[in-house]
Amino acid sequence: MNLALIIFLFCLFLVALGGTLYVFKQEEKKMKQYEAEGETAQSELQRSMEYETKSLKSNVPILIWIYAVTILVGLIAFFVYAF
Image (cartoon, rainbow, N blue to C red; front, side, top):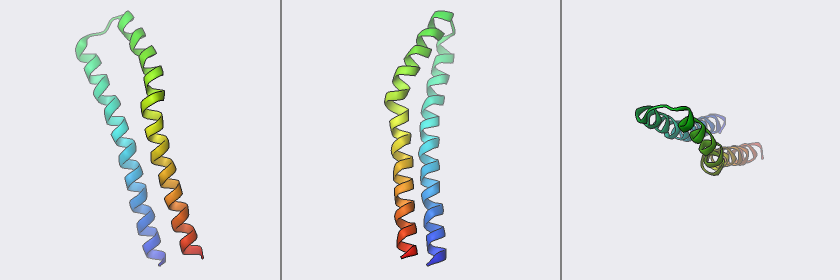
């Protein structure tokens, strides 16, 4: 059971890491799009303000769900193993 728990938690870690990288790739794609459009001081300021408002509404909730589910499932697996 000990080896199974370790393998399960490792797979859970990989899923959380994959979700985090997915969010990172979305942001990286946006950055490449902004670079292709060209840079001006006004567009950078507008993009910065847009990022502050949209990031809190899209990326942060996704990451919170990823880590909340990972922690919850990890704790359940630990308690199943412990008892």
